[in-house]
Length: 394
Ligand code: FAD
Ligand code: PHB
Image (cartoon, protein in one colour):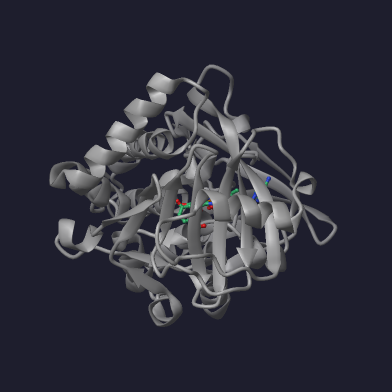
């Protein structure tokens, strides 16, 4: 039987950042990841870091490449009826910004730092199961390098994403789930071409939502709203570019830079919250506990906010024997989680085509006009988009 203080399941942003914040307080952990290192480092996902999330990566000593290669943005564009409206986030929030830096780059930096520091981190583990999570000596059973192993822990951190094993290990009835699915999905591509707009463009079009983001000055990230059951092989390159050009069209001489499509995929849209985010000695973190639609660019940022709360609570537990911050972990995190659910659902309904109701479409346009003409409304968008300060809600 192997032993550690904190058993961490999953090497996404949640698991890797948690292990690092624990190590910096002298707390030992073991990370178990079902995928290979290469898979984790290549998975295309989020791209936007909130102001405080970027600062946290700096504070824990993994921000150096992000500061060098990441793109700091002070504003975003809302585009509708062929016109651009810039939301000057920095000006509206006293200088707060976002940093565009791919999640897989964050993961590469975290894995390199973990390995350099001798963090126990096992990839390609299989058959992970949890036992005795309501006792003070929970165990994780798993298979690694052909051997069946058992790891005994004081605490287990479920950082294994929405489809992981941790949340389903909690007995029926012990947690309540809140869920909403949306009648659309996002088709996303990476194009090896320069972004046509240096800042993100969120477009509302009668054919549906479109977004122009980027990964670097040479790589554009683009999305379009598609039906929920659509498949990627339905779409030729020409169809994707034609739809993007239509939905992102704007008065004046702006056009997308077409390049080779180097990655493509369809992501379902859903909202989900597990309440509480804890059962016994198992703590759910990040996507294992909640999912937001990507319109507000919040998934990875919310995961980082949870980790910050759990790392501090485990610090209090190990250094002072104080259980209270662990006992209030879920309630503390859920305040931020529900605010981010609110904001992500709001951004989603503001920008997507939802059904054929002409009344709803007029209300949507009125809301866009209000957000882009009222300083108060624009400030509400801006302060949530750059992220409410860590500590303000959790
Ligand atoms: P994850 O990143 O999902 O990490 C969980 C880890 O656990 C994975 O490495 C997984 O392999 C591992 N795991 C799973 N099951 C097991 C098991 N049984 N045993 C061991 N390990 C296991 N957010 C944004 O903010 N903006 C975006 O644009 C955006 N785009 C997205 C696109 C896609 C396709 C997806 C899926 C998500 C996107 N998100 C986006 C959400 C964001 O990527 C997540 O919120 C973020 O990854 C959450 O981090 P996490 O560490 O909690 O979970
Ligand atoms: C991305 O760059 O992948 C991205 C940016 C903003 C979003 C969603 C995704 O709202």
